[in-house]
Image 1: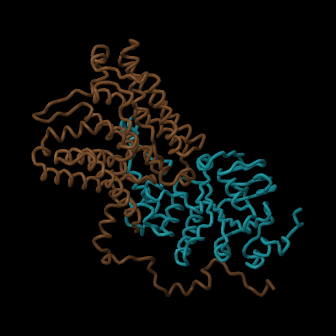
Image 2: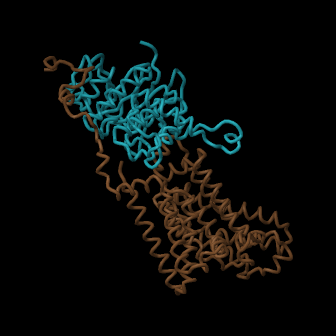
Image 3: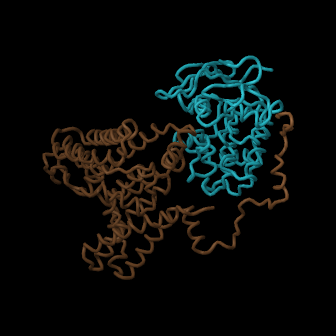
Length: 361
Length: 259
C-alpha cells in the first residue's frame, strides 16, 4: 500500500499550490477606516500616561476658573504638592508592586513602623539621628523582603500576604510606640535631622518643601530604573506574563524579590519624609495610606493586571487626588463630596484602562 | 555521519505514578532539521522540556558537543546555546519587539552611564534587532518599538524565532510553530525554518502537522510511550507509515523491535 503513494517533500504541498493565486495580503488594515475614537484609543495605548496628564491639567484649569486665584496661585499649588508628598512616595513604592501584577496593602504600615523605630531610637535611646534613619531604611527593606519572601517562596497571593503583614506591622508599631506619639518639640531638641523634609524653600509666594522635591526625585530615579535599565524591563516582563518571562530566561523569583525589597526601602524613605510633613511621630498616622497609595496608582493609569503603565502616572495620580481635594474644598464643597469624587475617579480610571487594553493592531 | 551535536541517553522522568520519559534516547546531528512526532501523551513535551532545561530529569545524561550538561533552568540551557521557541512563544505582549528580543541579554551602554547607572544602549539594541529581523526576511514589521501584542500570529512567531536564532545558538527547538497559524502564515514560518537551517543551525521541530514535517525534516524521530521508537527518513517512509508508527499500528522497521 505504501508504495503506491509517492513521497512528497521539499516542495510546497499540493493543496497549498492554490494559495499562490490567492490574495497575498495578510491581515491588511484599511488605515482610513480607523475612526477618531479608535485613533484616540491607539494613541492612549502607546502613551498610557497621557490620560492622567490630561485629567490633571483639565482639573487644574477647571478649578482655576471656578475658584480663581484662591486655587490657581503658586502658594496653593505648592501646598498641594506638599500635601500629597507622602502618599506620592508611597504610591511610587506601590507602583513597583502593581507593575508586577501584585498589590501591597502594607506600604503605609511599613512607613509608620519605620518612623516609630527611627523616632524611638533617635529621641529616646540617644542613637545618632543619621544612624536611626539608616536603621529605618534597612528595616523598611527587610519588611519589604518579608513580603517578597512570602510571595515568591511561600507562593502566597500578594493581596493576602500584605493584608496579613499590614496587621502585623501595625501591631508592632503600636507595641513599639506604646500607642504614644513622639512630640514635635522632643524631636526638635533630640534629632532635628528627622524633620528636615518639613523645611521649605520660599520662592515668592511658593512654598516648596524638601519633601515635595524628594517625592519628585524618588519618581524620577524609579522611572530611570524601570525604563532605562535591564532590571526595569524584567520587572515589566514579569508583570506582563511571569511564565513567559521565566521561559525567556528571566529569574522571576529574584526580580520579584528585588521589587518588594526596593518598595520596602522606598517606604523607609517615606518614613523620614513623613516625620517632616507631620511634625510629630504618631503611630496612628496614615492609617488610610495603603489604600490612598493604590488610589493614586490606579488613577495614574497603571494596570492592576501588571506590566502596563508608567510610574510617572502614579505621581500624576497622587496630584490629581490632591487637586480635586483642594479645588473642591476651596469651592466650598463638603468633604463627603470630595470622597465621592475620588471614588468616581478610581472607577473611571479602571474603566478607561480596560478600554485601552482592548486595542488591537 | 558526524558525531551528534546534542544527544541524550536513558532519560527518565516520572510525575508521581506517570512515567513521562522511559529510558529515552535522542540524537541531533549538525545542520539537520529533526522532526519529533508522537501521539498526545507520548512524552514529546517532556523530552523537549528536559532538553531545554524546563524540567529536571530523574535519570539519564544529556550531552552537548560531547560534553555532559546538567540544566536546572531554561536560562542555563540558553546560556549553553539551546534556544527554545515554545508553543506559547514566551513573549511579553505589552513590551516592544526590541525589548522582547533582548529579554534577559540586554546590552548596556558603554562608559560611566552603563557601568554605574546600568543604562541600556537602546540605539544599539534597535539596530541589531532590525538587522536580525531583516536577515530572516521579517522586516515587513514597520515599527520595531511596537508592542508584540499588536503583531499577527505569524509575525510573533517570527520574532520568537529571530530571538532564538540571533544570539549564537547551537541548537534551536521549535515547539508546534505552525499549530496556531493559517496556511499562508505557516508557509512563511516553514520558509523561516529553512532559512535558519541554511545558516547552519540545527533545528528540532515538534509538530503534529505531517505535511509540514515531511516537507522540511531531514530525519523524523518517532516518539511513543515515553521513548524513541525509531527514527525514519521522510524519503523512505510515507505519512501514513509515520502515523502508523506513532500510534503503534505498525512495528518500527530495521534491526529488532526495541524491547
